[in-house]
Length: 386
Image 1: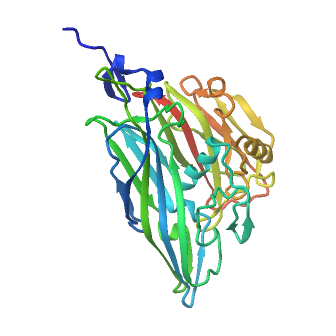
Image 2: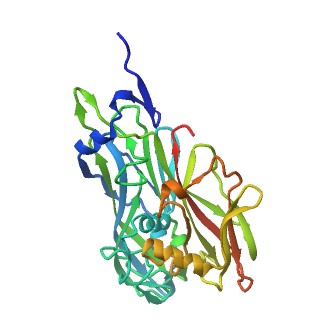
Image 3: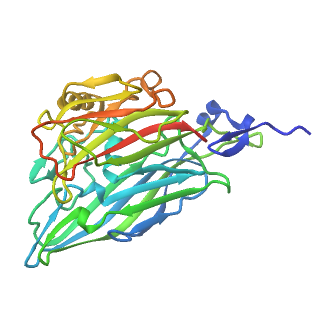
């Protein structure tokens, strides 16, 4: 008897006849459920979350709900600019032999959510940043609570409620499910690791001042059921993975910097590349995207091919705000080279043909650099095995 032809998707063998996207989308059912609700491991600790092996996984939401306890004593307590979203120092998601499909900090996940969902905005959601009340570009949603401001000084003693949320986009898009993970097999291998920031990354403590964080971590999964037709499963095309990888570059200088992007290769397509530059003593702060801080911003490949080069930072910041309906460059200092927002089929970058991809970042001559570092995230899709 002839064997049914098999097709490998994300390293998992499924019958060729089972790949029927139109039928799948007509018959599937979305499911939302809590994977785990557990006590927060603590600052500088790690939570490892087991993801259930069922259905098709498209999105994971991580929530922290708890209290920040501030005890100044005879000293003082302040927050750094890493507070609150880089409480998640590093999120790592691995599936089916592809290590670190998602590997970035919490703030990068927050800004990516606004980038992809341009109908989402933070206008009117007030938060305190560096001592000023900000209501545009906070990356905050109304239901969230920071407890205390970012870059706040001389925080009064007390207990403050904290409610934070981060969304991990396993699939690049929640409609076509490109990059979603087929989980309904014992050979599926999933790993979610949450690395929490150290106290020194979030707080500046003087004298006998102290700050403690306690609460619980909730992980919510979005899945889609796998229909059965004539005794066979029906699935969409899940041949690609979706990836968000953060890289830190410390060799910055005034003037033009060319940051070579890691992880290039055949079969990979770049959707967007977004960056913060951190500068200053201690934990530092992200540089606002202004002409006082940035000159030319762009990207290059090969010898000196430069498809995009903008004269100053404010031009890219304005373009980003039009794309995302949120000012990502003011309070949190993000800027993004966007290739998927208008027409992904036309504008995305094939990393197999654009060798030596570099990001062009010109830092203004009036800056003083102290422990300066660029943190950038490359968002891409790629075929399993690429």
